[in-house]
Length: 250
Image (tube, rainbow, N blue to C red):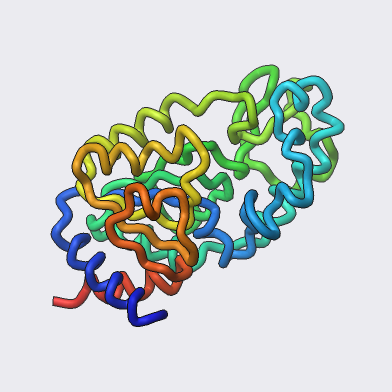
């Protein structure tokens, strides 16, 4: 970590210790160190796959054609992924009462696996499937995904329980996310480009209400020059380990 980033960590730690309500907002960058590639940018998933694979009308027209790519993109990667130190620190902060709420754009389920419970998965999760006919929601197991498209006992086809292009954000996740933003005085943003809406409005809501934004990312993002107050230029795990140590100092 550079000296500049270390100084930013100390500033951020002071702000976090003084916060009355801290929330976190995470994007794909927090999971890169767990082996899950981001969707956008160099080496991103959309450089290798057609984004229209996740267009809801296309999926509903021919789910059997879409499912092989969906399994490869989301389940072959995520089945091997484990939470990293950044996920674990956030979960520990929640258990200690330091972190009030966590909003994630990610669908990989790693925050839940790390132990986070005060959590809104803004775009849903690939860890569950939902039947297009009866609405049954089940865990996405390797057994279910062995034969494609996966089918419900009722005969309907399962869809991953995350938001496809052309679908709306689940109401419960949307309302919980913005309720948390409305009451936060510090928002920790980790690994988000700030380009995906309406999710990117969560930290912007905190800022508009007078809150402080602490951002962690190896490179500047769409948030950095517009709303960020303290920018820690580092990877998620390294920064969160350093920040965790700093907030525990007297």
